Each structure stands twice: as C-alpha cells, then as structure tokens.
Amino acid sequence: MKVLAVATALVLSVSAPSPSADAARDAVLCSDLNAATDRRFDACNGVIADAALSPEIKFEAYLRRAAIYFMEKGDFDHAIADAGEAIKLKPADPRGHAARGGFQAAYNQFDKAIADLTEAIRLEPGLVGAYAQRAYAYVQTGDTDKAIADYTEVLRLQPGDANTYYDRGGAFEKKGDYDKARADFEQAIKLQRDYAGEFPDTCFGTNEKGERGLKNWPACEDN
Image (cartoon, helix red, strand yellow):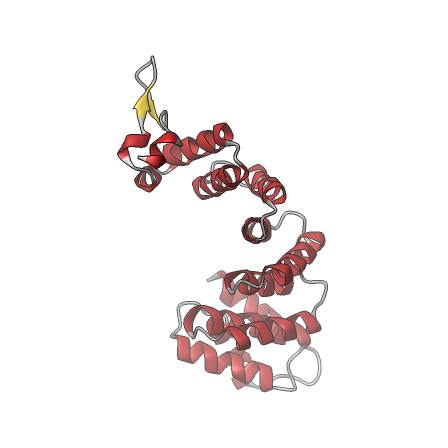
C-alpha cells in the first residue's frame, strides 16, 4: 500500500536519535487507512509523543490525527488544533493549510477558511481540493464571482467533474445568471444522472430535436 511505503520511507529517513521499533510501527500504523480508528488514533498519539521522531513524521501524524478528530470523532476543536501544530512544523507544506481551511469551512468559519485555503493555493497552485473548498466558502460569504472563478479553475484542473458543474451552477443561480446556471446543471445531469432528482419534473422539457433538459427552469421552481 502506498501510504505504508511513504510512512516507512519517512521513518527510515530519520537521523539521530534513532526511533525505536515501536515508534517505527506507530508511524506506519498511523497512516494505515485500513486499520481500525482506535488503533490509528493511538498510533498517531505515539508518534506525536515520541521525541526521537523527526518533524516530518510528526507533521504527518498531526494531519492524520486531525482527520480522525474531524471525520470520525466529530471533535472540531482538536482537529483545528492538530492542523495548527502541523502548520507550525512545516509552514511551507500546503496540506496543513488546506486541512485547517477545510475544517474551518465545514464549521462555518468562512473568513478563516478562505485565508488558509488561499495560502495553500499560493504554496501549491494546482491543489484542486483547496479551490473547491474556497469556492464553497466564497459562496457562503456572498462572493459569487470569486466562487465561480474557483469552480472554473477546478474544472480546468479536473475536467468533467459533475459535482463541480452542479456547484458552479448554484453559484450562477445565486448571482441571477440563470442561463449559465441552467447550462451547468444540465452538464452535471449528463455526467451524473442522479442530479436530475434535484429538480421537480416540471423543470424538464424537450427542444425541437427531442432532447430533454431543464427547458422550464427556473420558472418551474415557482410551481
């Protein structure tokens, strides 16, 4: 497994003092997404507490533990704190800023999220997830033009993503640009039919070629 190989390489790269066998095992287990949550969590704790391990290894452990706090324990405060510790260890690594920005966006701290995600993008301009998260934060703060620009960049980097077409359509809708919103919604439906269920049947119609689409949208929303 790739994550195991990466973690093992990190452990082997440590100079002095040498990590114990337990520390090396913890570093691998902390990054093993197939392991049980409690085992990964305990392993990450062990890595973070071990003074013999390098900042690079601790950085990975803080990010892994932050993800556990956020995704599996619902502990926002500790997730944010761990991401912050990771940033202190490697401020030039975009993943720390991207992680903390994503957590902040999920908990409606949009201004802070935008700041962290912007820094992540500055450090790595091709970071697709950071653009998507920042676009969401911009939508929530009412800055639809910046959101649309970020969603457009996601589609440039990751063409054909149905979720992004749908989300950008929503941003166009908020802006009142219904023609562009309809085009994005229809593209999302073409790429992922499940999105058709987001609209009432009265929104759909056929054109002169017999092609079915959102021909009655947005007027249908008032019915």
